Each structure stands twice: as C-alpha cells, then as structure tokens.
Length: 163
Image (tube, rainbow, N blue to C red; front, side):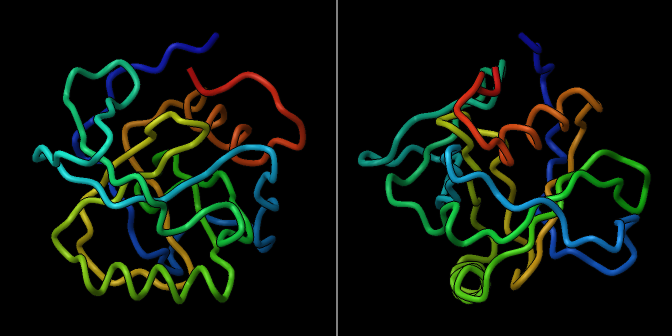
C-alpha cells in the first residue's frame, strides 16, 4: 500500500487556467464506483460536522456532512503538470456541477472546501476565487501520490482505497 507523506500547507484548488500543461483530451471520465465528494470545511470546530484528518497529518479539519458536489457533477479528471511543473489533478465539471461550484465558491470565498475520495480527505484548500467549470488540485504530491488519487477517482471497479 502506498504511503502518503505529510502534505504541504500550500495545497490549492484553483480555477484551471489555460497555461497548464494539459493534453488536448478533456481527461478520463470520473469513476461511478468511487465516491467523490466536495464538502464545506473549516479549521475551526463545528459541533455538527465530521472531524477528519488528511492522510497521516495530525491537523484536524471539520467537514460538513452534506456534499456540495459528487461524482455526477464531475465530467472528467486528468493527471497533469501545473505551470510550475508540479503534479496536479485537473477536474472538469458537468454543466450542473459548474453551476453548483460557481454558486458555492462565490458565496464562500475565504472558507475551506474539502475534497473527499472514498472517505479519505485528499485536500481542504482555502477558496480564493470563484470556480466555475474547471479546477485544479495542486500541492506537494509525488508522482505516486497523484497517480493513486487519479486511479481512485477514475476506477471502473471497486479496488483498494487511497491509503
């Protein structure tokens, strides 16, 4: 099982810009057997929210129970290199997913957004701008880590979870 090292605090969910080193393909369809959820999150305790930790980290994130977006709101994902050569996941939302994401991010700039794959908190970045039809998960991910996340997000059958 792949061990995920402690991630940098500089994990971001950014609007996907055209300068990314991405192929002409929109990506791989998102898995229908893996559960992917985007939920509102906070670094401050919330009584009725779930307490989660990212991978091997001790830092606690509080996550709302109700997802804002799920698998059905994601059209494609792609493993890419960002503008500075780092490993990243590009996400293309469906039309409805883009509408939900734009509404949520416009109302929650300054808040956190948890991205959860099969009950594993991947990241909980700070929302710095309105996000619409595309986004990019960036951070201090190794090639193996980003591949594990990508493979889980695009799985066609139930398999090992992200550790």
